[in-house]
Length: 218
Ligand code: DC
Image 1 (cartoon, rainbow, N blue to C red):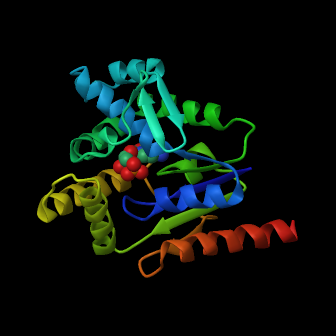
Image 2: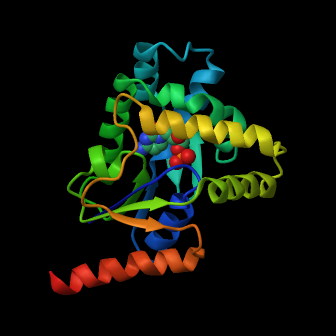
């Protein structure tokens, strides 16, 4: 079973997906983390981020390991490193290359093959798993998403100005929504959930109610 979840930065996808998977007793894949690891590796190796072919090679040879919430690159833990503003700033450029996306889509299908997974990202309901058992699109007002991202970084002890973060979120939204290949959009048959005024458990319960309903009537 695949539960596919898409939505913009700060919509709560990651936390919700993690909790949902836990409640259902199945695995969870944060596909953004894979793009983040690739961006980190590309920056560390001083690769030109406009060079899709070199990035594609890097993506197909990179050694990523996911253990629960921990992410490893070449056996080094990079869980916190991949969520810094430096990665946020450069990731859209890396994710824009069709060659890179092709490798990533195959990787995501390989990781989840024949298993039960909650998978979240930007193109999961539209490109990676258009025939997923369940498809959701999580959204929230821009200001709410900004606030969540600010809080998340503060809690990690990373210093960042509100204005800078606002500018970065706007830029990332624009890149996610207008990308030529696999832009973020709600799949026609995905269930839309506005999380602006909902608590985390309210969102998870909402998703669970749809999942239970469909399972009962199958
Ligand atoms: O979910 P996130 O904020 O960690 O994702 C970071 C970036 O990675 C996002 O702005 C675009 C890219 N991404 C993507 O292009 N496709 C995905 N399935 C997941 C993430």
